[in-house]
Amino acid sequence: MTPRTTTVAIVGAGPAGLVLAHLLRRAGVDVAVHERRSRAELEGAARAGVLEHRVVEHLRGLGLADRLVAAGERHGRCEITCLGEKVTVDYGALSGGARHWVYPQQLLVRDLVAAYEADGGTIAFSSPVAAVAADGAGRPVLDTARGELRAAWAVGCEGARGPVAAAFPDGARGPARRYPYDWLTVLARIDRPVGTIRYAVHADGFAGMMPRTAEVGRFYLEVPAGERLDGWDADRIRAGLAHRLGLGGADPVPGELLETGVLRMRGRVAGRLRHGRLLLAGDAAHTVTPSGGKGLNSAVADVVDLAGALLEALGDDGGGGDDGGDGGALEGYQRRRLAAAWRTQEFSDGLLDLLHLPAGLPPEQREFALRLRLERIRRIARPGPEAAAFARAYVGAGELRAEEAGAEEVWAPAQRSTVATGATPR
Ligand SMILES: Cc1cc2nc3c(=O)[nH]c(=O)nc-3n(C[C@H](O)[C@H](O)[C@H](O)COP(=O)(O)OP(=O)(O)OC[C@H]3O[C@@H](n4cnc5c(N)ncnc54)[C@H](O)[C@@H]3O)c2cc1C
Image 1 (tube, rainbow, N blue to C red):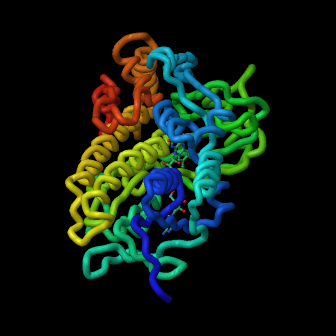
Image 2 (cartoon, rainbow, N blue to C red):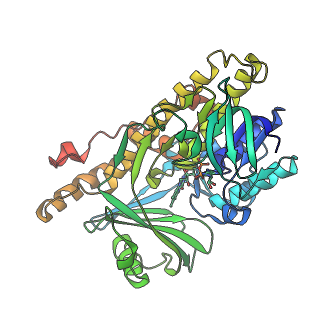
Image 3 (cartoon, rainbow, N blue to C red):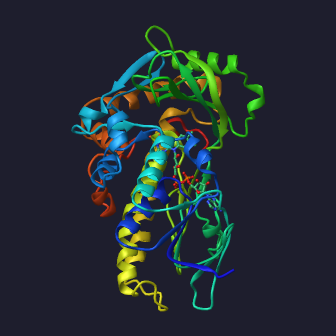
């Protein structure tokens, strides 16, 4: 079989791969997208739903958010409960008017696939890439389910542990953290929409309630690290959610559980995003816990930056010449997006610290830790510099371009549990 050739091979048709494919194809670059899942599996996989202001604005500018804007909902407030007090954080107002969009990931993916096809693009579904090697000139050669594919550049938009990352000398490993708890994740039918994101800081463990659609909500329950799903039947899950979230009155009631799982809570940032003609973006480059709703948002921000850098590199090497030169554009991508990934980890880690009690805390010290958290929660709700910084980082205020330049604001939680309670660092 004659090997196929392309300029940019993209592994993975999640949000990162799809947005990158759009941007390159529109600029006239030849692109081949391989996705291991079938179209139905890809378009049915429910994960994210809370989208940053700046990401949606950017997609809107590209004409890729018409259905999102028509069907999505805007959210500018969250509630955090602790010790029986419910604190409302009006992050829309605190950020100066930015709000989240709520639109399920699988619908966004479906829209991106449809728009790509309407532009004349094709995606090779059910077509895993088994491995990536290099030819004599250092150009990527992909072993795909549809035969060999030779490319000038290969981009791993493949989620964690994919074949492009595996072709990096160190497997694209980097600093990582395993948190001392996991989250039981639940998609449940609800009797009324989740009007407001709710986080519960509770002596029995964190719980969360996130909007998705009018009929379905996403819920989280903190469980011990390594917990298995077997011990959690539907009644126990519903009772845990109702108890920790303090559900009652006008709150939605979780009914049928449509999907349950245990999410291993990890943070990770690859040491490098580029090795020769191999590049990484999105979850392939970094994994962040869902605490701040940042994974999909970071994935889109990565590829918006990467598309510009790749176009510059392709101009410099005449479409993939043998020198591999890129005038530093791709090194710039790596530098900016690694810096952004660490800012995102810092934000999400700070939020996790606020939402969970320190591991192994004796019961008699729990109320003390809860009281400290309540003070911190009140502080991010009270207008002032810390509340504004939290709100802007949480909602993704501003523009993606400003983030690329490293000009975004950072929320630096003033008080962390390790300092405040003297507990063992986790
Ligand atoms: C429960 C949960 C809730 C979340 N909530 C939010 C949220 O509210 N906001 C937010 O921003 N983020 C959220 N996230 C994170 C978000 O879902 C991910 O960060 C996002 O999907 C990353 O996009 P991606 O394109 O980088 O990777 P993925 O979406 O993982 O896409 C990678 C694609 O590559 C394909 N692939 C893998 N290996 C191969 C191969 N060998 N060959 C071909 N294809 C391959 C996979 O099948 C997949 O389709 C959440 C995650 C979870 C689990």
